[in-house]
Length: 277
Image: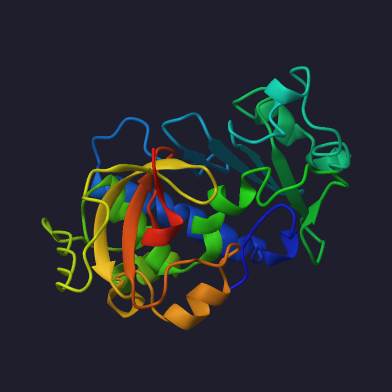
């Protein structure tokens, strides 16, 4: 499955599909924690605005309008942050945004905190991003990580629900939500315990250990498994490995950890690819 990012806007789905996924994420969050005042995923259907908010201040705002859709996002660790550009938005990020869609900038809740922008006009056949001269590096604007949950893969939301709500939501339930259907969640769906390692495979890190991943993000170990075939959020390990932007040093049969990054969510990273924070 291609990685969604502002650098490759063609990886985004059609507008109707994107809106359905956004609404589903908001419904799922509300179903899992109806008392949360500011959920990670929220959708104002009247205004046609979707928000993704992380605890560290990273966020995405998607505005659905008759003229089209605008996706604006911010990663505070990005070298393209206004903090590294005299408090101005990085050149090219919003400069080419069509005039018919610029109202989305006025509706944006986070002022100049923008590191990526992509849009699609209502009658256009594809998504577009501006002509941006980005710094060197992978995912320098943060869009690949922040937009990943919009890929429509239920496993991504299940990993998020396990990390944030400590609930194990069935993949079929998430798929129904993405398809636009009503959903019902059981009162308790406990997270499965990690597979215990054999004597020949001893984990280097314990659950709760603070670590740093290959992208220099900090997080906490939430669980571990021995071998990718036991990883609960990987349907096809071979295909998953081929889709990674960094080739893991950890062998397929080695120990893999579920890590909760400080910014939210959960990722699977091999033992040899981590270092202590």
